[in-house]
Image 1 (tube, one colour):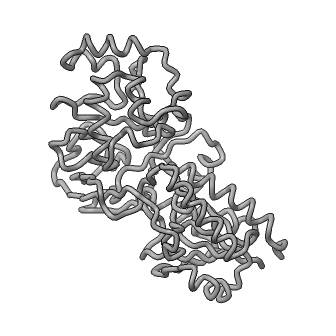
Image 2 (spheres, helix red, strand yellow):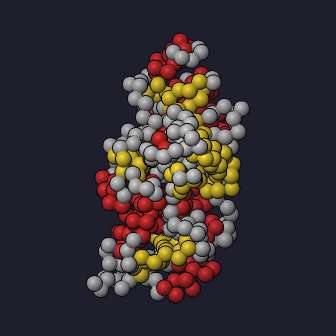
Image 3 (cartoon, helix red, strand yellow):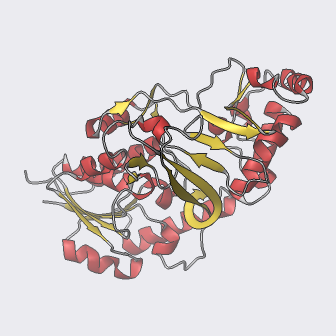
Length: 379
């Protein structure tokens, strides 16, 4: 039976292993952490289900991915709505026209918006930086209140240096006052007792999948690991600069850390699952409360205070030099491991800012490439 070695047991690696197993191909996942699942794992604190790494909302247009996720765990029908603290008051995020009248300089804001009503936001994403894109969409007043301080707290650099390519999915003004963040037809949050951890456990529940945790793999010992499990193919879902010993330099990431606190005897401590705090007077950038999505019935809640500039790999810094560097690592590793033998999947290996459904889609697509290059399994 063919065997695939998968480096990294996050959502991408686990989804890939699942698809291969159901095609009769065995896999061995090597994960440096103590548990699989990466950033999407859910946990319990004081009996309350919460997300230790911040909020994750499953939303997608991809029916195959949605069906796969639902095969692992039932989902409730949660739709994500975010609040934001602006001028000391709570408003909706994305920006709603109905919130403008509750703010100072409302008439000026409306005039700036009216001038920009016909802006093709998606078309501008290829031609401008993030700051220019936002100014063209909403004007300077809303930009300075909602966007600029939040963005520069999150990314630790001027908004004018950031790419606009991801902006249309994350920033908008809702002329129709739709309060929900995502328009995708399939949305929800896991309804099982362990949240997203139930998805990971379901994906790994197959006799052809072997998981080994606490294993830190690098290029230097990859071949020994591959020989040990008699691997026919290798898939990397890990950060490539670290895997290759940073021989060409380090890739830039913007990290966060979430400090979680159990609040007893309170059903909910805020009005939405996520509340953004763009003001520089706040040391954190947003507060998470999973109970809004989990709908768990229990006493108490958990709040997660998110701080930026942590030494973690959450968000790639989309600059041309970083994209070129990751491409260089991929080309190098194809040469070292074998062009037809190694594959890359997921946000870390492809240096992308992508959602959970995209991680699963990349895993499914990678499984096709892997299977095409393997000897036929003996069933």
